[in-house]
Image 1 (cartoon, one colour):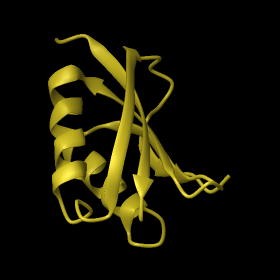
Image 2 (tube, one colour):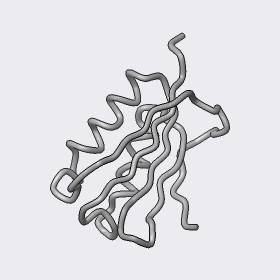
Image 3 (cartoon, helix red, strand yellow):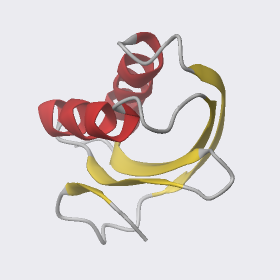
Image 4 (cartoon, helix red, strand yellow):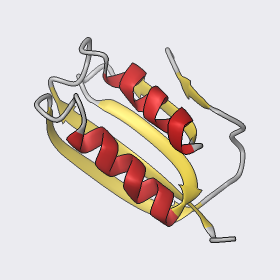
Length: 94
């Protein structure tokens, strides 16, 4: 089994109110990625995801190049070890 990793991403652009969080959640469920996504007050979207590194790369590629590709101006990702605190992927509202 591959080592689990965590990626913490801040997306900017026109990423709020366009189905971004729902898309991130749907792709996560398809790929069995756990974590969360939420809107930030400054207009960005914050995402934390955990899975093996290859799955996370596929996940990020799917989010970046899927239906949201025209809304994303940039994505700042930080990688680290997984914490294994998540059982599912969820949209957070606070």
